[in-house]
Image 1 (tube, one colour):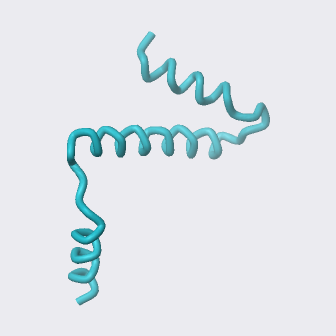
Image 2 (image 1 turned 180 degrees about the vertical axis):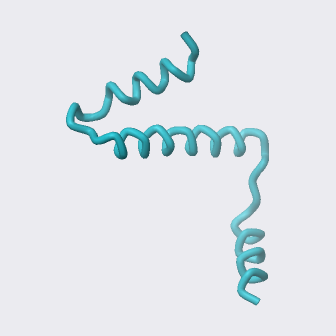
Length: 61
């Protein structure tokens, strides 16, 4: 079995028994976003807060 399936099974099993479909999907999506963010951080695919602030200011013009 794939690592992804094992991880998702563990995540689902850790949720309350009465979790809704939407809650389960939200948790799976959140876990994936966190994993992707950590991968980006390790690979230096991030920008500084100052750079992000600069970019947001350019959007407001």
